[in-house]
Image (cartoon, rainbow, N blue to C red; front, side):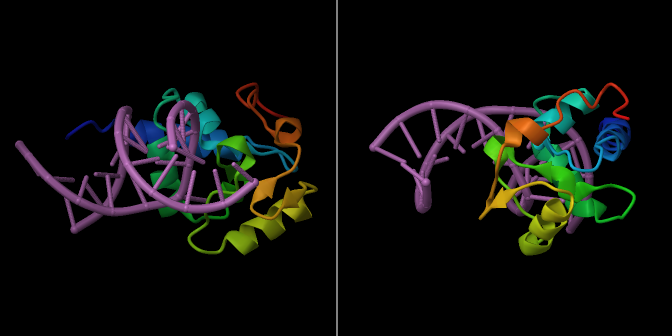
Amino acid sequence: MKARAGSTFAARVLAAVRRIPRGRVATYGDVAAAAGKPRAWRAVGNLMRNCRRADVPCHRVIGAGGRLGGYGGNVAFKRSLLLAEGIQVSGSRIRHVDQVRLTDFNTRAK
DNA sequence: TGGTTGACGGTGG
DNA sequence: TCCACCGCCAACC
């Protein structure tokens, strides 16, 4: 098969997202880096799209610069979830992203 | 097997 | 600050 790495990569991405503690977020680039492919943030979004499961806090994955990114069209719902976790969201932008951004979730966050 | 898509990132205007 | 174009990797058809 053409690069079954997807399985490993996907699993790593999901695992990384799962390691994101509540009230904390990570960008696609961070998740991709945690998966071992800092340049595969594109694929991360792809996997997230196909994810849609409660096991993974996909709503904690945001775009770079604090952008909400997307959520299958339910961006409003994603924003609500973030707000419920204590993350301040201003319009389609995260406030104090650097404050809630988790780039070190590779260290078994909590 | 090959081509297109996509919850994107970054730079430029 | 917002919009548009280009570049990237993996999954899907």
